Length: 559
Image 1 (tube, rainbow, N blue to C red):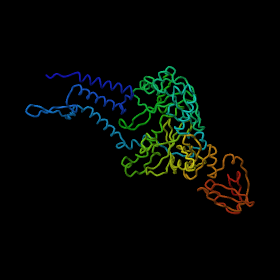
Image 2: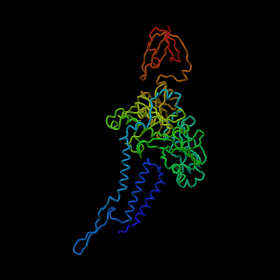
Image 3: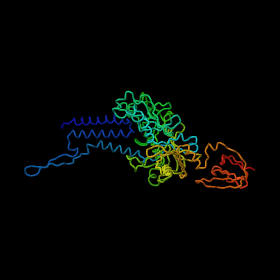
Image 4: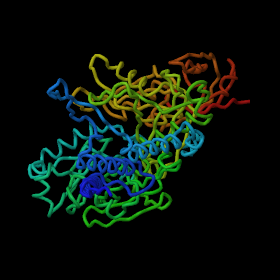
């Protein structure tokens, strides 16, 4: 009976277990059958076992081996190499890899297009109702993350006792803080040795950036120990993994409650199609970084102060499934009937692939929540939007508005063109309602990232552009361009009965205005679209008007 060598199997098992243990500790994969990362780790573990077992066994079937060929009468020979790979020893890892690929393909959009299109529930809504003018510019987060980073770094740079030990994390989170949009970011340890020096006291503060006033401030807090920049058991993600090893967690980020107390929030991910497909969110985990206390919430029970559970990137991905696959996968490839997607752009990041389109979006603070806004365009690749998407990052509620107009990149180019001699760059815009007009609003920055001007661009007529040094002045100029008087002017309204001596219709920037000249040669005006009854007036008619300055707010025919 042939003697079986045991030690190759022992060495193989030791190597495989070492790799498995290190992988679990370093990568903290969710111990969940729906986690693709766990399957890959197991597959590599099996492969390592086979490779080490083959190597330690000394078999020639592993790969390239050295052999000797005899030549001549004296049996002299020469050495040569031969590839002698025997695949039968690798059937297990190969079969496991094939199984992973097969499961992934079965759960892909190719075979489940309709199911993917139903993950995000989108309702049609009224723009003028959902984004009423009461949702003013103080609720619009115009600042991009890079500008927030710059302001945060400047604020911390002025604190010598802080900057020597900590950095400001570049992972800024857009939140609603007591009804106003604010970007927040925690400090982080500036390396392993800084963690060793400060871990007993923790991180004692975070940065808030006001995207409306363009200002930053450092807020002190109790020492935060369980943070992403810590090491070993105090690493926030690893700490959560030890408490919830079976949950798939994503989007770990920093937030504060309405009292300013810091927390970390992680989204709980579920795969709803096959094993690996149909990514969505089922709830969140909230971590108190000071005490280490945690709380798990389902989506329906998430506290109001938490703002980001459905992150913007996931919502955009889910909307693209909704927009592309409602009529099946083949339609998305060929006919493309009814296919639409969120606005995309090609990244300008030097480290990114410029050929890969990336979704982008702005933020609106509304009803105590943060809503992402992005344009929706057809897949034809033109420079126009067919509508807009507004989605709640806490609940995932998504609303669609059918408004045709220029896309965000065209609006940004129009704003930049207004001050092209200065070379300013526009930030990604947000959407506001100005007297029923969907309007892009954005900031224009210089090469150093400093905000220099504000700009408004009409969505439906993006040749209507205004810029100013302040939001209020910019909107006032924009209203003037639209023929809308400012609140200060319309506050003093008078009444008068006049006899019409002449009527003129004048087009201004695509809008028709009615000019009435009375018998005393006084001139009054009104926007035709808002006063359609005035189109029936004739010379000689007597009318009772309410007016402010020269603008008619109400007109009634007398007799």
